[in-house]
Structure formats: C-alpha cells, structure tokens
Length: 134
Image 1 (cartoon, rainbow, N blue to C red):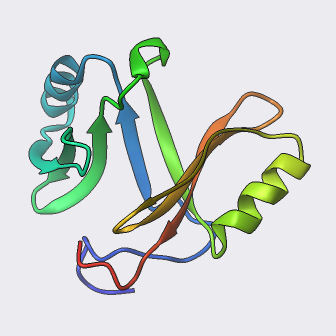
Image 2 (image 1 turned 120 degrees about the vertical axis):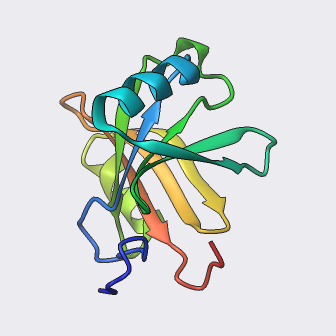
C-alpha cells in the first residue's frame, strides 16, 4: 500500500470506496460538508454529468452522484467491494440468490456492478484498473 492516501488499494474483499446516491445532490453535499467539514471537488463524467468528490483535507473520502434515471432510487450510501474478477463475482452472487441491478459497467478507472443480496443488502463489486490514469 502506498503512503499516498489517494492511491487506490485493490486488495480483494475490502471496501475501498463509498458513494452517496441522491436525487438532491446540492442538499446532500451541503449536509455532509457541514456535518464532517468535507470539501468537494467536481469531476466531469463521460456522460456529461458531474461527480462530486468529498475530501477531508487532500484525502478523498467518498463520492456523491445523481445517476441518470435515479428519480425512483432512494437516497442511499453504496459501498464498493474489491474483487479480482468482476464477471465471476457477478455469476457467484446470482448463484447465491442475489439480484443484479447493474450488470458490469466499464469506466476508465475500473468496472463495477450493483447487486442486492437475498436479505436485502445492496453492495457494488469493484474491479479497479491499476493502469488507469485517474
């Protein structure tokens, strides 16, 4: 692991990232910025949307997004769990009874998929791209 707090950790089975999914990003950003003293940076997404990075000092601590079509999605925190093989992880989750909401989505910095376990807990798989320039 790097001494740089913003260097990604790709260790399988850990939660390297948390993301707030919200339909009212301005209100959510204001709340968490006031609550924790987080600052924000904005990052343009390939689809034209803006992704908000929460930071404590220079350290990135979480993200905030209003995904397209999220009008019917409740505001929630989503944790991402590192996996070595996202396709095998999706298949295993389905085999164990999970419902996959987003099949594999590929981004420059890695790939993710969102699922709900049979008991109702929602998580995301994350397979980072160590060669990404992000």
